[in-house]
Image (cartoon, rainbow, N blue to C red):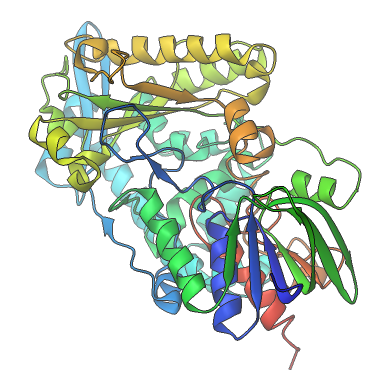
Length: 523
């Protein structure tokens, strides 16, 4: 093993892989160290259930934030499948089982669905106006995520919807939405993008929900969430192939023990898969691990624990279940299905979380990836009509799982099954496939589970609070938003990097640019 590299990258998640690929492409010698026996971090595919040949996206599951520029720059062989349905929201009102359908692109069925649910065309018109403005904002704002940071005033001036951006920054998200939508269910569908992985009070002015909402609507200039063909592992595998192709060395089973960095460079001490301790020197170090993990490796005081707030449940079904509303399940599950996510229910869920209770009813979203990408099913499973189901619950902060994670996880699964049964015409358990041990194909992960398995402090999928995508002050203008106290050490992951979140590669790109380009010189 070579004992010195231009750059050592700590962490083999997708951001670490992107940083390694860009740096190696620029001719730098790069060593990437990953403590697990595989690369990809949360962007992995796995056959979770014994005897069931289905490659589930075990943790992260959809792609919207990954810019086309990164795919092109690195020559990634990433294929993303569009979904014909944006969302479907089944619910009961006045004793009737209804559902709000939003097609992609929306047409007559969407208009009719809004009219049936709301009793008029007002909400449909408001929907078009609001999301039309968001589309313009996304188109203008997305390119800046791969550029040096600009001031807030500069960003507001460069986008056509500067007033909408200011509204998202300055007003509670609940107020922004309530000023446009009157129906409780319609408003809730809009608000959910402000709560993905974020425990937030929708009525607060702290910006937590607003910035989360912004990131989930501006991805790649369109905000369209798509299914990675071959599963999320195919995305990270392509990034790893690119990094290796450019000459980076990627080592798994490498547990980093210490990082010492100064103005001249750094040394990284790590233990390989054979238990041998090694020390590797570098001119610069890229941290693709959580900020709290990096602080520990540097021997610095602990940083505040971020709050993860989601429960992920993976399932394999023998067949798709029928809905009480009567909708074809291949339509109802073709996009994002919202359950117990009206505006009122989201507020109640936050209150439950604050009171240290799991929300009841549990608000969650459901996705059937196999409808868009049958390739993740093995030949026998595909022939038998198997399908996958992914459930993502919200407003479930990590502290709810700290005392007794096993019991809290079991309770969350119970609430999720109850929530699904409330909108289905048959019990979910009757539709679940069973593994070779006779167990139902259902696997859940809490924030506490992510903290242990992935090193995501607090189980926070963003590694920390999301930030607005511009400089917080004049001193940060022109930086890449990844800098630390030393020019020889940069962040690549969300939480450390100012911009990022989800499977985007933005943090990895900007970390590499900070080392390769530095801060642009003012003209």
